[in-house]
Image (cartoon, rainbow, N blue to C red; front, side, top):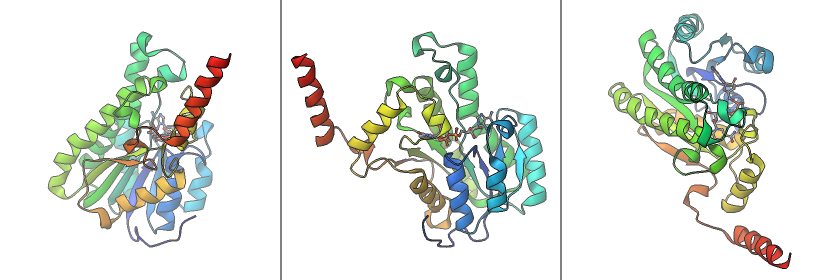
Length: 278
Ligand SMILES: NC(=O)c1ccc[n+]([C@@H]2O[C@H](COP(=O)([O-])OP(=O)(O)OC[C@H]3O[C@@H](n4cnc5c(N)ncnc54)[C@H](O)[C@@H]3O)[C@@H](O)[C@H]2O)c1
């Protein structure tokens, strides 16, 4: 656990997407709490059964408001109820994602389009909805900050990431489109493009372990952990980064700037030699 710096002292917000201790949003909530923020936690009603959000709520002294982020009615009700807990909204964290075809092992060439639409709705359009309803509610503070979590599969092909690459490309575009409009009120919005991380969503991607090991061997700093992602996130929620907006910010130990590393070359050389020997 990092040292507290009071970076979010007095700030209030909403954190979406903490399911269990492994969730990136969970670790972000712990870091935001450490930095002095108070916040509402939110997740889909189904997560009440699947996750352990009550524990985090106790630990951070936060209320929970259950809302499906693909439902306008749920989000409208969420902001109404949030208004009874918060004076204003200084920050929002979007840690929501799910690939329905990916989950069901349907290959990209044969996507079920109803599931594909659901994937885009949950993983990307939900960011638009969350920002839209925050603005409609009149609670979003000037100078506020919004952070969404992305993956480099938005920009480059990671074969097993499949439809989620499309969802993340849309998410990053929504960040830019809202960023332009929110800037007029000094509100920032950015995407953090995070390393593979062992979470429920992460482990749901086929070949996750191989992608994790590849990231570890390619990145000069190794894969970025959930804890370091949370530390980076709180800097973006703080006033110290008030001129940063509309960006996809790589939090990946250097992965995105690499081509190949000695470690990967050696591994490949060994596996090619083994193939030749066989
Ligand atoms: N784990 C990784 O390797 C990795 C890497 C880069 C980016 N990300 C992104 O980080 C974010 C958080 O994922 P995570 O890895 O912490 O996994 P996670 O499974 O812990 O979190 C995903 C969350 O989305 C919530 N969710 C799903 N459908 C919802 C809905 N309809 N309404 C509201 N909430 C809903 C789930 O309940 C869950 O809490 C996602 O956007 C994910 O794509 C993850």
